Length: 157
Image 1 (tube, helix red, strand yellow):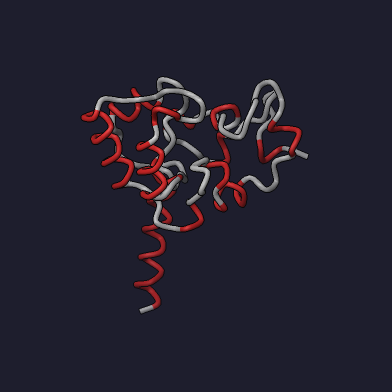
Image 2: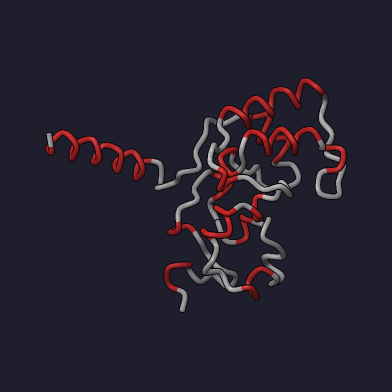
């Protein structure tokens, strides 16, 4: 029995390594990538809950100060994708609908110095690609993190 459990755990570990160690993978959706990615990084669906995505997609006419309205068909298609691959944990929910306000985000970024968020190369917590250099390709692993100036995250002081 112990051998079986060890094999199952090894298989899960191997699959995590095979996808770059990223837990933020979902099948590509060209409409989501094109529409959401035209103004900012197309954030992975797992970063918010389905309820948060429904609220966000229902208010695209006032999307964080911009009008990001889609056609009803585009909205339906993208929302279905976001809901299907959304997070189920309350740790991925924020009443503000900002990913950076979720308990998960705050926990994952607790070691990031406050001054880093305001540097010109970063600007804000919503600019994931400023440090997650492979995020556009779906790779969120710590090995791909580069701080402004090129320092790797794991080599920081």
